[in-house]
Image 1 (cartoon, helix red, strand yellow):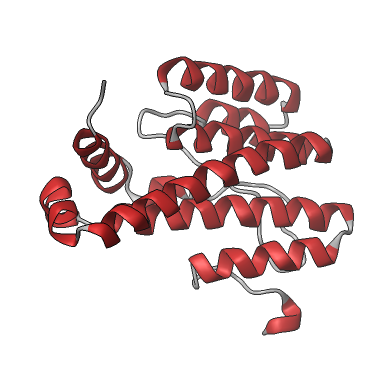
Image 2 (tube, rainbow, N blue to C red):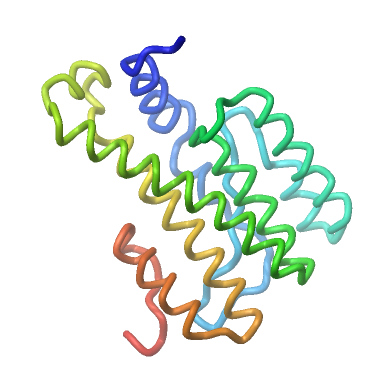
Length: 195
C-alpha cells in the first residue's frame, strides 16, 4: 500500500515538475462564451488528452469522444478509486460532450472532476494545516504548491461546467460556478455583471 508521504511527494512532483502550468492550460480553438471563456482540455504529463484535443479541434468530434473515453478507461485502470489524476480525463470527456451539445453528459463528467478536485484540495489543505513542517519535509521545497495547482485545476473544471451552462442559456447556474472558480483562481474572468 502506498504511504501518504509517497502520495504527497508524487502529487507535488507531478504537478510542479512533470506538468508545467503552460501544459495544463493549452490554447485551443473552441467557441468562447459570453465572458470570453473557452472550454479547456487538461493535458497530462505523458500526453493524456492531447489526441482527443487534436481530434476535436480538427472537427472530428465522434473520434475525439472515443479517444477521450479511451483515455478515461486507461487512467481508471492505472489509478486508484477517487484518484485526483482522474480529474483530467473526466474534464476532457466533459469538454468533448459539451462541444457536441451533449450537455447532460458533460455536466456529469464535470461533476465527477469537480468532486475529485474538491476532495483533493480539502485533503491537501487539511494535511498542510495539520503539520506544516512535515508537509514541507515530505514535499521538499515546493511544499504547499501542490494545493495551489489543485485549486487551479478545480477552478478550470468549474469554469468548463459554467461555460456548458452558458451554452444552454442557464446563466444563473453559470455565474454561481464562475464565482466559485474565481475564488480558487482570481486570474480567471469574472461574469460581466461583476466587472
